[in-house]
Image 1 (cartoon, one colour):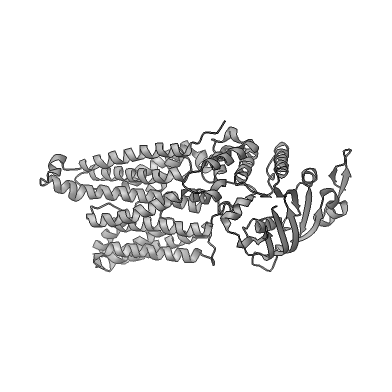
Image 2 (cartoon, rainbow over the protein chains, first blue to last red):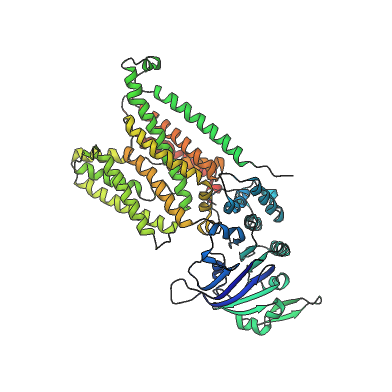
Length: 256
Length: 335
């Protein structure tokens, strides 16, 4: 059972401002968590701390009982995949080469083992990227690129997926297909934590919603309970109404 | 249906071709030159064929192969580490450091240092000192980013060049000629002992770089990308820039700065083979050596018996070729 246990986690980039302060929260697989909050709320920082990319955090952030900064990086990255916001490449790697890089934590030699190739093939099947595996990554559309980056993360064979705005640059159809994929991975037993700005997507797909504001945790619970009109005003400073759909699910209407 | 696993086969095919051309060039180049040499007589030890072939041409060919290979490999490496398609082995300031050392040796008339030619020792010391300074400027505690490394290198480059201009300004006529000659970069026949030392440095460093090829792939994408896949970007940046600088420093001390090899060979290979460093690195070494050898052979025969500095040839051939590549494949280079 993979779990994250954050207790009083704080982080600052060295100035007087703190990005994260006293965040205490637990996550246990399988669940799909939407991490929301206004710009600068500390969402990406929190994800970075959990992914082991921000070692200078205060408080305690444990994965499977061991402090994140004490994990052997190679073992850690066999359990935890991190998906960046928008990957730009300076060099002509193919889609397949990008996915193959996900196998580095398992690398023995100069070339991938048969198990590596199986994992890569499986990840590309899940993300529906096999069709353009030989094409140059930079020549792909935004949606295709994001699926390739997801495939690279899945090829790591992780138990936890941490995603920083995985659908930021995608059109509606591709946003939905990414979220469907994430829900499938949750059903396979993964812990999925995704930063998102799209609250309706969070309501539709996430099993839990965690909100940050000014680096502090301000809401945590099932999406339709955690999101109320009052809280939206509080956290995001917008007026909005949470409506109930005929099928019982909630959706948000913005505006006065 | 299992997907086709192409990488190992691509490597074999690409390296076989590169190695074949490398060997053919290495065998043919010593026969070209202002004096006609009969290789049968040379092998039999007859004078002057033997002296021309084994005393001057073969060592110069070997130097060209090793220098071109090292510079081109270092170019591939620095482009990946700095994620800058225009990075060269000289971006980190290594060659201007070497040049400053060499110019100091010329101006102060230091002919020998520790039993070796003063020019080599001073140039090598200059590049190592530059490397240490650049790393010290770029390091921030235990962290280091490619961006600060790039800026530190560019700055050290300018400072060294300013001192070179200053020294050149105070030099007499003979020194001035020697300085300009050094700055153009040229290949001179060396003794076999020096070549052996060069080989003993270049070979292990190159093999180490090749073994780490998958890590350079990660670094070429990004530091966070690499860290999220279990490697330490700071450590790779440090060890990589030291390895690349050793290659560059050794070669530059013996030849002076030779431009373009470290820029166009890597780019041409990326257009042909893509960005995987497992294919790119061995090919860069072999094609880089071949390219410099061809340029140097042209430098020897074009205006024979006069010889041109090879740095001029690499720029004259390399510049336009690079522009053609740039125009024809602009998208894949820059997007």
